[in-house]
Image (cartoon, rainbow, N blue to C red):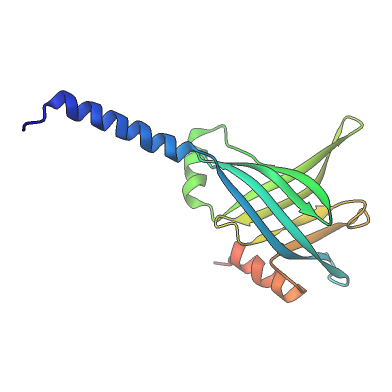
Length: 165
């Protein structure tokens, strides 16, 4: 039995459509960590549980779009990452990144306040960033890292996410 050129083209077309559809299906990430939150001077720190619920929309030529929630001490922060509007920068960042930058803001009296910002590794196993919350950190800007139980583990995570060349 001989397969004609038209049949091969149709099969190839449907295969490409199927692969692109599977590529663009959003992926969900649900993770829980123990996070260490410490002051900049490192004289005070405490440990909290942190839950991530993220949805990743993959992109072929730009960084992946990530949106979701981070829950710390029963407070939920809506987080997302930014995307490049420049195609060349988007492509470069997609292939050169080791982590994503996510942030959560709140609108108060028409003003945008940054509550939480953090880097998360591409495998979603490490978090390092800043948090400033009236209840959790008493309005002070503090560092947050996960999974971590003490200040030394924060340094190890910092080295994993931002290695010194």
